[in-house]
Length: 165
Image (cartoon, rainbow, N blue to C red; front, side, top):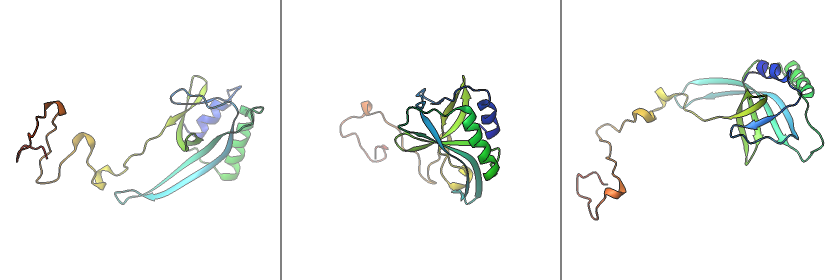
């Protein structure tokens, strides 16, 4: 979800609600502790230079059960951040503390914001040398080892050229 989409959805809400993709609710007493811009400048495993900018929100569960962040207040925080930090209309990445700080994408479904799971990926599959899982290739001159079910193994069945080792 881009920042403009977030602010549009936010303007139509009376109450802000976040949940994880598995349906777990972020407790209603959460705080948005940061709104910012994160710029990454890196080289991928294929040697290509890349840049990425995201708008970053950090959600935090406080032991403050008496206060709730209202849509108008969050809209003010976002507007101030856009003005002072010159935030682009980029994808939003949400940091949320679970067992560790997780990074999530953001979607809007059924009246609430959903923290979507993000996955790592090779950005240079064509250049880095790791075979595609669908078309895995063995090393030149080596044939792929046959897959044998444990239930089909016989005691002492290993013989030269049988592929068992």
